[in-house]
Image (cartoon, rainbow, N blue to C red):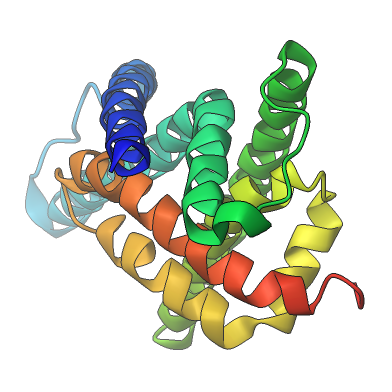
Amino acid sequence: MFKTKRLLGYSIVLFAVTIALTWFGYMVTTNYADTFISGYFNSPPVAEGIWGWIKHSGWVTGKWFLLVISRIFAFYLSFLFSYSLTTPGYVLLSTATEKVQLGKHFDPDDGFSLRGALIDLVEGIKIGLYGVLVAFVALLVNFIPVIGQVVVFLLYTYYSALMFIDYPASRRRWTLSRKIGWISANRVVSFRLGFVPAVLSMVPFLNIFLLALLFPILTIHATLNFTSIQPHNDGTQ
């Protein structure tokens, strides 16, 4: 019971920190984006005549398109910023989950240390930067009708799975390439792990709150799945 309460305590603290950092990053990013966009769209063309109407319609469409894209991009940047900074905390939550699941069979590491926290932070930043690359590729692919949207969803789904298995994998000091290799070798499990967060990230306005709320739960769920598979693979990877 005490261990379960400890998991709950970790989850509440991480929820509060995650949503605070994500909201802060989102506000800063959107304010900067709005300033940039308003500099190019501060004087709409006069809608006079057919050509004037076409130019005005293009101006309105372009402005709204940039606003929507900036919000989506701002969300992912702010969430990746929050993700990177909270990685050591989620590694602690993941480790505590493994202790509850494995009991006396848990293989303890050296425990919490400043060096270990810094390593976790660096790994989180790596995943965050990789996420920026994924977001950029998704932005380009999204222009392909139908197929592009499917590919984008798959990219975000498997990247979400990578974020969650990063926590138990980081405790084992895996490299980023090995984590990606695990995702590739366990595609079905990875799809299940990343499906819910990928869907939640697409919910307008509520995505920050929902992801921050469920992130600890999804971390625990991913850790349980990872540790149920990984002991059988330790000797082969």
